[in-house]
Image (tube, rainbow over all chains, first blue to last red; front, top):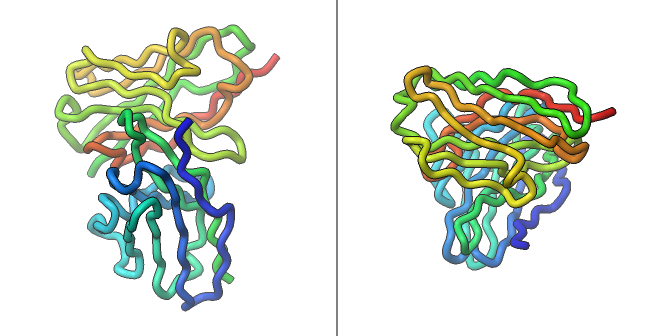
Length: 107
Length: 116
């Protein structure tokens, strides 16, 4: 079945740039979306349609997508950005798919 | 402000049933498709079911098709997930989300534990 593949973990120091990737064969034709999930909370949309930022999301969050890989970038990661991040897209049959999630540690 | 409140989770034995509710507020409920997503302990997110605005079209993940039923009451602004023939592997946190072509707002999840 179709998969979106993310690294299990990424670790950076405060102020550094964190990069989280999501790879999937359908991504050249499908948008990628990114969600932040803190412990015990509902997921929060941080990037939609590859690179758009919802209102209220800090400018340090950005997204891009090239070929089969989408990327979430946190420029100047803060301690409060520590969370799990999931990518989302659809497969070629338009079924929803989530990546396995990446635990971002900022310390 | 968009708000989604999930209720109805709990502990049930294998083969049992549960019904989840998702009460919506802060937006015109019947303008949006809605979806259920679950998260197993320590694992990622998994799409479960989607229902279109009028409730006539429904879509299910293959492992729940025939056992789960998604429905909605637009007058009450509530989304439902009837879960029958529950299995241990159905355990997890169940979220409802509003769809704008993609999940844009999520409610806090309700825990479902299937265990004997």
